[in-house]
Image (cartoon, rainbow, N blue to C red; front, top):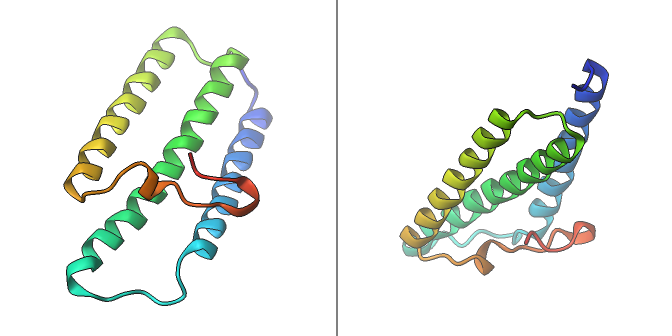
Length: 116
């Protein structure tokens, strides 16, 4: 099992990745927001779902690292897998509700590359 220092380092690394990715998202957004009432809901949904997708991918990456490192027991792996699967299904439902595709959420994160 990982010691406290390793867990803090892993947590800090995940936080750094999240901050870097959020800054990249902010840079990729338009300078002006189109406040067309008919499109504002979809635009907001796209932004929120993009952030959720980014966080999901970071969580998935961290989970794989922890599994490869042997710091999760079988029950934890199972619970984590089910949670990520449920989140993926819910994201698919929300994309359908708002008429969005995976490509709509695939923004350019600058030096980090594309989200997906």
